[in-house]
Length: 333
Image (cartoon, rainbow, N blue to C red; front, side, top):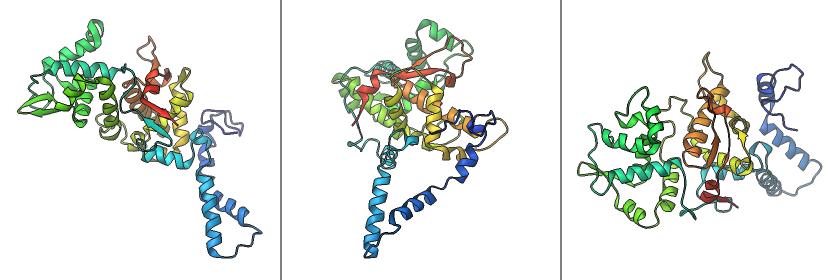
């Protein structure tokens, strides 16, 4: 039986496995050695006529092994994980993304985009000297987005004086530009011709998939979040959507997904800087939950987060489940 990172260590120390014998077990584990041992057992005592026959046996063995489901990948094989990481939008035998949603999307990114598009309008708006959205438009959009009470809380310790003061809006503006929905023309921010056509036609059912694909493939998730770079977290976004598809039918702690992610990709712990304040696992999970679960899955309405009334509660201490939107966005084959 697989030992969870937060399970009691089987050595009897009373510590969690990750704080005791996990590191030693990982260092002693040699995947190449395990494969060689399995191959030796397969070929032992067999008489093969030629080198070509041996190579054929080895190729057949590796083909079977690469397509066997793995517990650390929660049922995905090594071959499937390679597709998840390298061809998330081009693996129809595994997963299919809808280019047009079957229902009107309901997500924070959708509500914010509608307000931004309405604020820019047909005439466009003049950017600031730094090339950002004008202050008046930012205040108008954020006020409409948050509502009276939410806006009052947002400006409690400082007003909306520039685009970056409400980072969701800043992020959306960048993503919309990367998606070709917004650009500058003759000194103004304007909606692109294609964006206007989509808004007048299918609407957000067609714009949402475009925003999502742009967000995961072109926008840099590490931008201005003061976390470790860790580009692999963005590259592996589809694995989290797989976990949500498999386990998200009920509320589960955010830490469940953090632990599943570290179990699948423990090598990430070696890619973070070390200091006296945070352990590598805390750095990776903090970065993962912020970028993947909050700023991606929650922003795009793919999860429902069970919020706490206590503002001091960390995101990792909350729980979530998948939303109906996830089923509209993609389908696992």
